[in-house]
Amino acid sequence: MTVVAAYLYRNGARIREIAIDEKVDCARDKSEFVWIGIADPLEAELRTLQATYGLHPLAVEDALKADQLPKVDIYGDQLFVVARTAHLEHAGIAYGETAIFVGHSHIISVRHGSARAHTELRADLEAAPTLLMHGVDYVLHAILDFVVDGYLPMVEAIEEEVVEMERHTIDNFLGRDEITRIFALRRELIRFQRILVPMGEVAGKFVRLDLPCIDREAKPYFSDVLDHVRRVQAMVDDLREVLTSVFEFSNLLEQQRTGAITRQLAAWAAILAVPTAIAGIYGMNFEHMPELKTQYGYFVVLGVIVVICTALFVWFKRTKWL
Image 1 (cartoon, rainbow, N blue to C red):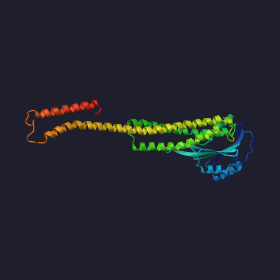
Image 2 (tube, one colour):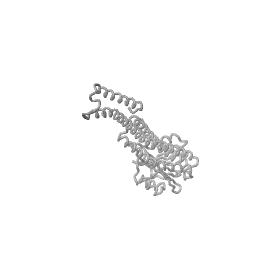
Image 3 (cartoon, rainbow, N blue to C red):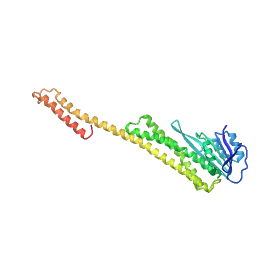
């Protein structure tokens, strides 16, 4: 059954359940309206709603396809709003769509692939009749705010992972799997930004424009939704910068550690070059060589080797090559 809930409301209170093919004659007072919630609907159900509430065919087609970016369309005295939901799934971001038909006395939400049902939202609104009695525009605000608030836990979870990755980078080289994860997260955040920008535009239209079914008194509520979107956008921008800095910082540390190892090898090579060179000279076995018949020549050569190597070792220590 795809119809989750369908009720008639009056003065902020639920009156009775209705059928989706039942045309309810609501008063012109905005406090009386119908709120219908559907999840993954059949085409026949949307066609029934189209006939009952006079929904525009193009809006119905968009709601069936469920592949739209966030937007607001005006069809006469009705609005069609598309919002995109997002949640973490298998270490990636999965997206859903919530299409909303708004008329003077009806609001119909159509969910596709959303991990969060509107049951809790409906219960919260029914517990606050002073807002619910104002009509469909306040319900619309609540749905959009519910969708946008769902972004925050997801972004915070990614933020925790990135912070842990940043801590790990200080003490360890990034492995192949970690580098792959960094680029995967960056791709996910770029895709998410493509949703956030039009979501901000949707909220901005409700703040700036005079739209059907939306009272001027409701605009501050939509302004709050816009602030939430901007907050998430700022967090995503910061996360992308941190991911880039983690990768660059890891590369710098790796270069630094590689340079330190190279300096150590060069220092030991220089120290070992001294006995190698001296031993090589006296190992050429020429008949006429100076000092070959000196009584203490062997010990003198060893002493020279030790002194030079020790001096080189001390010097490299002072210059922090060793």
